[in-house]
Length: 329
Image (tube, rainbow, N blue to C red):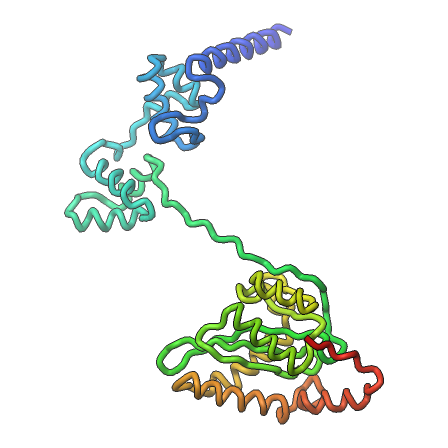
């Protein structure tokens, strides 16, 4: 009973003292600094709390004890001065350079001061920056835009049911980029198109797909990853206008676009890796020849050893009455 009463009295005394301290130091928001350059910034690090204690002592003429209570810092921590915390010219130079070059780490600051002839160790530069709360500003990663899936399709069941498309990159002899857009029918494994260019934008994607829709009819669904060309508003709006559903795979899951990835792998190992193109014109000629060979001659393991065109002809002959109506653009 006696111990409990003592504890209660102590708690009331501490609460009253904290309330008086908050009133003296600007209220319950004293944890937020209004020191020069720190408006409405929450004080977290020890160096910031030390500076705020000094500010409260100077501006409000309150005791060190009350200022430390307001900033929730031990008086011993406020008074502590490390062996390397001497405010000499080197110390001030580290602070000045760190403030001037905010995106530089302590190693860069040390190298710069070493080039200036300053006598200071790299470890001391690191400790000074840590004591002053000088941290490198990290760049935020941009959130990647994802496409809107209108129909989830696991497997194609007939020609023109699901198409998939992707990009493959290579270089010509002069080290300039080649960007190849591949379009595949997932049911017949037929490669409809490999368009080669230096740069292919969303407008080029629409132009290529429009040409293929006119030639083969439009598919029921189009599968792709979340590349910027595929998820662009122009492409999604155009596909919606054409009444073509979209299936965007999950980020970092290329196996969900397995048919196109398999096609791209074969394309790279049997064509791109075997040729060093001297120009984009040569690349287009060689790639078109390879695509013709792939569709008409090369046996495909998952098609029973037939080429994609042979498989399409046999399927068409055996399902003449069950063929779905070809959708035109």
